[in-house]
Image (tube, rainbow, N blue to C red; front, side):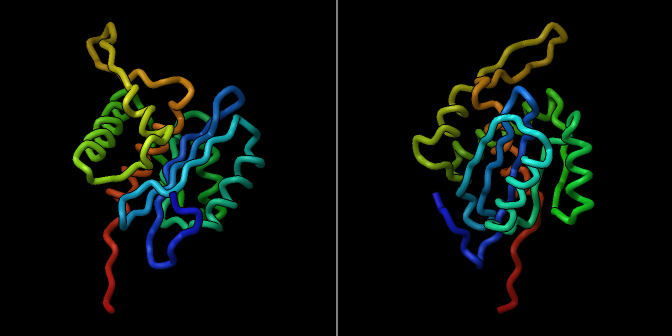
Length: 171
């Protein structure tokens, strides 16, 4: 994985907020090469500590957008970060959307459209995703608990690459 960004490339973050008993995860994807170039996960901490960690990543990678889960407290945190000028794009994660995001990521990976680091935690976790039918008849994703936030962040980074616009150069 890249440890330093290429000034010519665009980067997109996918972020799933963690709270007291769950980790926050950020996945950095190069929007031009469609490679996952960075992943970070940290245990649930207060907003000020999480904001500082995110700000450090923003300074390093200069993302064109940050697609962040906007459920529960994430909605208020996203709004606060938008007011500070960060390119936050909130997205509400429902059962249906989670399934769509996971299918989309798995399909892109299987087709070779995106690249995950070989043998990475993310690749192993994606292979471990299961599905179960709910009493309502809906099919829900069953994610490995220890990597659920990382998988959602990866899905959001890929979604962000698809919805952040194309790179245009007039040179």
